[in-house]
Amino acid sequence: MDITLSIPDWVTSEIAELPTHFPTLEDRMTQVIRFSQKNFINKTGGPFAAGIFEKESGKLIAMGVNRVVPSNCSSAHAEIMALSTAQKILGTFDLGGEGLPDHQIVINGQPCAMCFGSIPWSGVRSVVTAAMGYEVEALTGFDEGPVHPNWIHELEKRGIEVITDVMRAEACTVLAQFGRTGQLVYNGRLGGA
Amino acid sequence: MDITLSIPDWVTSEIAELPTHFPTLEDRMTQVIRFSQKNFINKTGGPFAAGIFEKESGKLIAMGVNRVVPSNCSSAHAEIMALSTAQKILGTFDLGGEGLPDHQIVINGQPCAMCFGSIPWSGVRSVVTAAMGYEVEALTGFDEGPVHPNWIHELEKRGIEVITDVMRAEACTVLAQFGRTGQLVYNGRLGGA
Image (cartoon, rainbow over all chains, first blue to last red):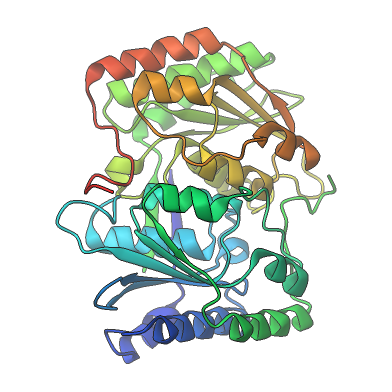
């Protein structure tokens, strides 16, 4: 029995056309926001994307987008897709493993409770976000779930840098655009609580 | 680009030999603990298993085991494997969707921060655990991560029943057996914090 999750072909094609490196945080977030927008415009998933970059060089390792509905898999969030793809490409379950450069995850919104918890396991050393959790919820209707009340401190305690508010307004504009499409907002209780 | 996670063949073979239904919580947890033990004895992953059952009938839908190291995927925890497999089998990202019976996840240990966060998204209506988080950590060396301080209340608030302490001693015995094997304990910071 296999579970197969796929990155859409348009993501792979677009990455092939991009530069290999993105020097600044704004360069990185610009791409992540663009992929978050194309994902719902192309109807390949929800309005979320996450990129894995080498922190110092800015080399793009992997780009994940939300795939919950097309994959019939509630865990196929953008962050899980990005981390899993980067780990497959690098051949390790630990992006912080010996001999590897520091890796950074760049996300268009604050991670939900699950994706927050996935970060310490992944080995990334840096997290960069745009929209805050309450903005994601207000603009899209998605539920961030039971996020740890001190999520930033909990990551920092584990040696993981957290940088918020990078292109926050731009990310919110795209989330609001999604909100106006009327596309499905799933919350794991479509059958009623 | 695909990410493929696999349930080991021995799991599929063993499930085929089992009854289809497990009436009591102890019947269900007995199987989950047995799979958690066979997983490290067979060297197919860490000492964790999770079963998805229909809550009322006790029908076994899917059994997941930890696959982090063999899959090079830090998110391939037993709970994620079990939920994703059940969702694939039932053809939905929402195990609480309309027309479905209530589903229950039965786990040999308290879920880590990530798996805790995955539960509200999954649509399960009931969570059953054996070992507590501090026991998992003390007996195996695995880190449960930044679990929400009020994790039980946060699930209950969302209409998800939580039942702890089912065959806790039996689960701890198996975790202690794993601890004595000296097998790899990964924590996403093998390269140092």
